[in-house]
Image 1: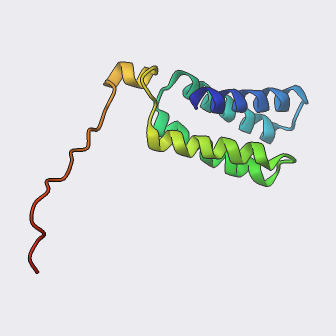
Image 2: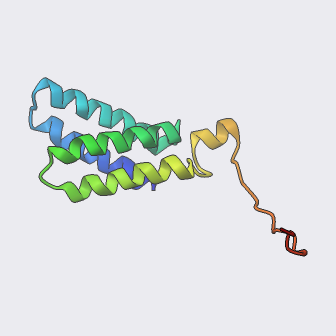
Length: 112
């Protein structure tokens, strides 16, 4: 998921910068490029995921192809909730976290 979101952001930033945009669009493309790099290497993934969602919502209003931004926003939200995964800088720095859910003990129901 990190690769799909990062590559989509990079492709959009590259096509925007190639067209010679005004300074505001160039700044937004630079921010998208930084967010894409953070997603690709898996650094600060929950924070980057939320920022990707915000970037996608911002670009959704001024886009000719909203389906792409809906997909990128969904990927950003999912990455913010799921975390970076095993192959990321975050897992190398902080260790990979795994949550094991224990089964509930079966016993008599609580009395009212």
